[in-house]
Image (cartoon, rainbow, N blue to C red; front, side):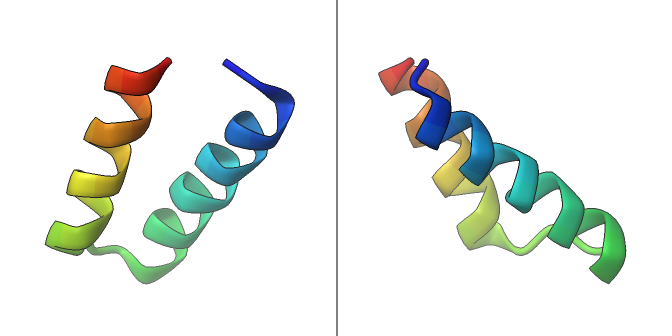
Length: 37
């Protein structure tokens, strides 16, 4: 996984934690990133 991708994942988890919810789009985004890694 690239450094850029890791930063995006960090931002994703931070936003999800702050919001306290996991939007379906985030789940899809995470799946795509995980599959691509």
